[in-house]
Length: 556
Image (cartoon, rainbow, N blue to C red; front, side):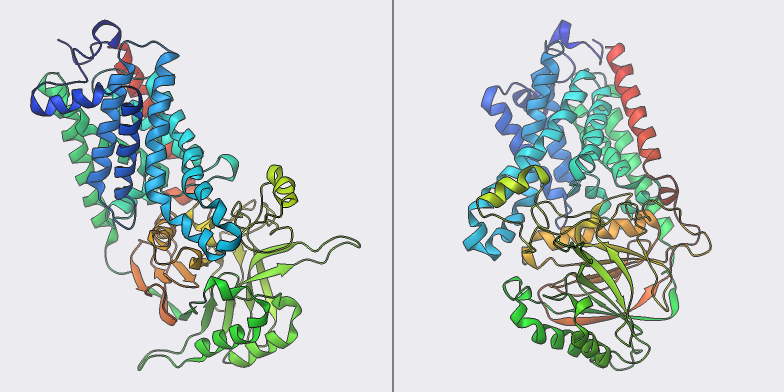
């Protein structure tokens, strides 16, 4: 009997489904049919979500992907293309639907903030979004199905399909790369170090290869075919951990002469955007910014306020800027989230941007970054739905007339802040986009390379749920990819400072009004391979997986 016996000749009599009690489990899963097969795929995907932050149960992803492999074994037995692709697509869609439903249920919290307006749409966010995004996983499983063969090579086929699907999910239709599979190893301090070379999507390929490999333990095959993939996966996982531990080394040094203060006001969403609260909100920020440092602590040189700090346009409010200037110790610099309006042409409505502003101690706004990657339905309504939804009185979550306008994609992300190295500005979920942290449209000035990633955000929409913790974990991985420290200020938390190796050097609890004083870790001199080459190495890995799957199919 050969490990690679073809489905066309043998169906499930050889290869994918084993014998004995453990092999019997694989066969029982493989022989599921109809709604039971799709239900099993949904449950498998949902269980795999336990591998995502904040739980971090990597074995859960192994169980999930092994079940997926066996479901594919059963669905593809005796089929030819395109029937093979269609059967695999349904399994992948159900698996992805379960994975995202279990991983993103907390999105429902945002619909409860203004429940009188948005409660009706809660099922669309909690069920509809995972239902639609599951199509990416369906496409990935379909691609894997076309390369499928019994034996170890089918693990490479699944890695190719899921790796490509996750990359597409992060880029198509503006992208939504939340809880990409690479975050399973990407939240472990040792394992995440590989992101400095291969990035999030490279980690995704490795996660699938490692976690799906145990499925072959239950194959009807010679020992080499049964145990080889799992042994290779164990060696690979150990090598990643050891290399990561070696890369960490001692603590990163701090930038001389810089002391950060991150202000976490813990403003609730039902009050944050009401104009009548403007004076109280400004006073609250100023009071927190002026608090004396802890005993023995250095005085802050730079103050950070979170995303959309004000329910008004501060650029047009001289009194508010004067109050802020009075609250800033001479020499301090403020970096804050704020809405910004441009000067419209006659007869046109002004465009509103979600921005980061640099405000010096005299109240002068010296630099601005406008958010490029807006949140669909949160900050704007997609063009093809905008007119129809507004016709029936609906709007995006943030009540800006017409929604926010995206910043120009060719805009330089770099902010010039007195006393700091060049700052890469990101707002809210912009920090989850792997490869998008570096300046857009312009080359980096080699004489003044970026020195930190600044992420201002407002996770107050989601309460004390996994959402804010997942957001921090994903932003943290950007620090490792780029070799830059991350300074993250969140309205309700979690605010944190992360060094360029992913170590959290200071953080706040969630849902607490507080300030966080911390030093700024220094960047990695020379940067990282990922910062230099982006997803090029991931593309090479994807090709290698496809080649391995094709080789296995030809020998089947």
